[in-house]
Image (tube, rainbow, N blue to C red):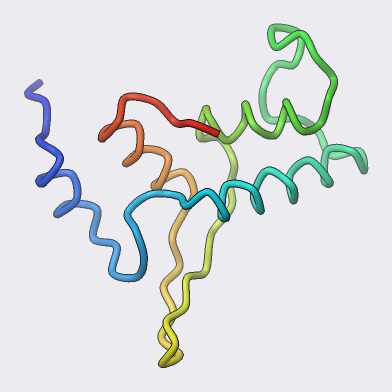
Length: 103
């Protein structure tokens, strides 16, 4: 399988509003929301035994790194147009572009 160049990845991403990756503010909001869910008793989406911690923030960051969070972002322009973007899709694009997801 041939490796896509960054321009091809961005063209195929088809994201019209914002960057074709998660901003640091979106990452912080996602991790905070997921950590709150975990602290209130939600089940982790990864095996925490292999992670070696029960800290909800660490678990939420690892879930984001692995791209397993079923969360959809709603990005909005000042004129009121919106676009719904899957976090899993943005993590996948970031992994294709940079080889990793930094949190």
